[in-house]
Length: 198
Image (cartoon, rainbow, N blue to C red; front, side):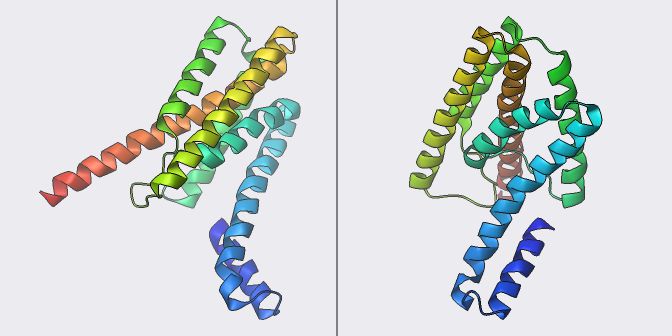
């Protein structure tokens, strides 16, 4: 739906002679990237507002959106399933930010998330691969961003801003969990393809 909508916007720009035919694909991708960042943010603001935890939701989603751009992660095959799962996960994570404490267990979760993001980034679809050079760049950026957000978590915890420390931690951990699921999904797909090819 988002990609089709981005395509329609790019087509309208082309029909209005604002962009050339050659630029349509580039503009479609640009609009898609912007929309795929704004829509989750709006969704979190709405859900957070309903739950009375809008600040928590916004602080949680920022590391997730920023790191995931470069680390990759799980994607459902159908958009409806993706939206439903996203809402469930966001509601669960926002509610967890209200009841979790910035303790040793959460710090261990952040450390584990930093390690898995560092090892597995970037996870891309089994059907699509990216060049090795681009993969290295994405990994470096994902690791740097994850370490920065982990540092923010530690600083917030140190200065007793525990509510926001938990939110940052939840964003980092959510990114890692979805990336781990994508890695497992990719391995299963590749294994099944190897079995079929035999």
